[in-house]
Length: 280
Image (cartoon, rainbow, N blue to C red; front, side, top):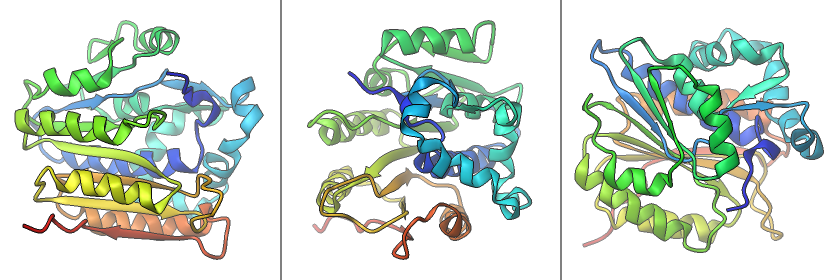
């Protein structure tokens, strides 16, 4: 596994993913009962945007860099949880990863389980959460966690699945792991991130998810530019299984607000839709 998120932290895909994730967590907080967040591919948790990796790609400039300059979004209530989680790092030229954003949105009764397989990244992740009794940072393959660590004792929660999409078998791994997790915890909310590079690859992923017989599923896709023949990274997607009530409507409003900020092509667009069920 060679993927290092330090090169991509704070890019446009992070912004879209983390705003949507923040809304899912905010919805869970509407009930007093505790919940757990699982992050299956957590990374290191916190990234310096002045580090060599981030400077080399400069991707954050077209993500969180643009968002910081978009004053109209700071007063939008749909973005409030996200900006709350970012606040400790806004002036420090840092960007929090998904586990740290999730942790900052938890209440005292809630818990976080963050998994990272890469030894160096896992070491940093454990240091970020050292002494935090509400968080478990675990050096483990997130796919294994999905098969054995759910359901949580809280019986409520969110599973964020954010794989690097490095391996040819990634879609098969996703479908297999999700199938196991849904059998163990059919009532959990699952948020799966995926890159938009080739329409055919996205169709394969959606087809695989449909075979699981999921009754309630919403896909959110944001294109900062149309698909390209060179198969570059043009957009970011998230499928949410068992989404909260009103999630699709909120996602539509969020994408509409982000389009003029993160789009970099006249063909930039978005779509919020329910993938059709597999025909019998």
